[in-house]
Length: 150
Image 1 (cartoon, rainbow, N blue to C red):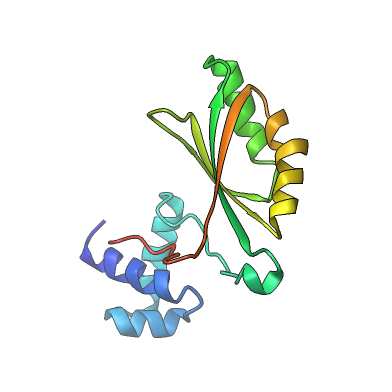
Image 2 (image 1 turned 90 degrees about the vertical axis):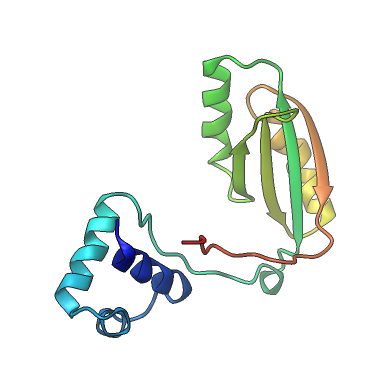
């Protein structure tokens, strides 16, 4: 990956819907070499995809919950089962395996505190191997970005 690839990626992070012609012109390449670089970065797994960002509050999903989870046991089967199960729930928008006191941290988006309570009781507590959950509610979103500092 060279400086031109980084220039392309910086531009695409901020406007993924930009036309290939406009992107090529902005970064100083012709259409075909720019397209080839993007295709190579997709094939190499550098570009994972493109996403549409939505305003959760406008969709009545105004509650962000950060949940810290501990598991009962840490064998491979339990970890794999937990991770697979967490993928099945659209309310879980981020999930990280952690070092330190928590085994996993999740960001969960729901419509209300009551909706989270129901999700906690009906879903989170029943994920494979869960021993305990500590939940915190975000008061205000200060920053949300998908752009990496490249």
